[in-house]
Amino acid sequence: MSLSKNEIKLVKSLQIKKYRDLNRLFVVEGVKLVRELLEQTHFKIDGVFYTKDFKETIPNNIHSFEINESELERISGLKSPNAVLAVVKYPAEAPVDFAENNLVLVLDNVNDPGNLGTIIRTADWFGVQQIIASVATVDLFNPKVIQASMGAVYRVRFYRTNLTTAVQELKASGFEVVGAALGGENLYQNSFQKKTALVMGSESHGISPELVPYISKMILIPQFGETESLNVAMASGIILSHYKSEHNTSN
Image 1 (cartoon, one colour):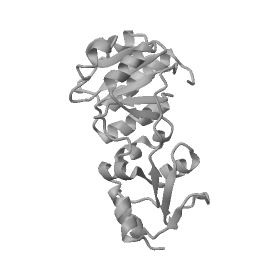
Image 2 (cartoon, rainbow, N blue to C red):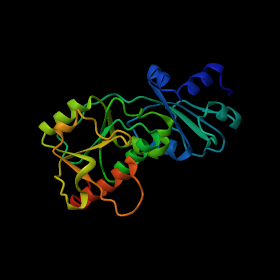
Image 3 (cartoon, rainbow, N blue to C red):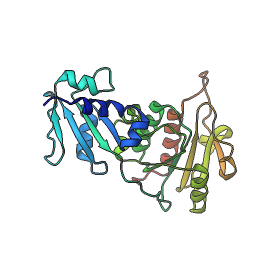
Image 4 (cartoon, rainbow, N blue to C red):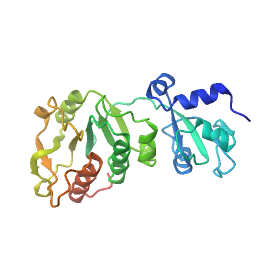
């Protein structure tokens, strides 16, 4: 079948947040990401557009359309489209689980989509199940976030909310709230409680002043070389690794 002008217009518009929010739809591209999408149950698929090079079996209950490579290029946001594109529905919103006995990652105004996607991927690697982000953090459904997460968005629960309220609730629920900032305690001389809420600020502005009163302690990754700084995704990975070295469980 050939794509209609309206279908092309709709799928292309999902590269822009305003139209993703309006239609409550986002795009997943590429064989690996769509394969994992077909295997999970949290996100509901609105439709799959694939070329003859896509060899995965698509369940009969999912709307799917074989298109040619030229048509895929017209709807894709990638420079080199990879055989398949899926349109996916926004998931139903769920409350944060404040009873969870594990580290919760708190992201304060992380603006770079590549960084956010990498943080989600890293969090998934270390078994973090919940990420709470400020309303100013980059959109979870930004195509660059989806690509950088390498499928981790399907597994890590992500919430966008008022961080001051969330941090207060985490503290009231028994979490030790720890922030990463210059002037903090040496990470490698620090111990984490099992129930830790780790606050990571933006690279340009750090942690917002309104959150600081609710943070029990600040930690710092010590510098041993000459590089000026670490990006927030790398810093998150280092701290999560240290946390897991103390609390090496599957949960």
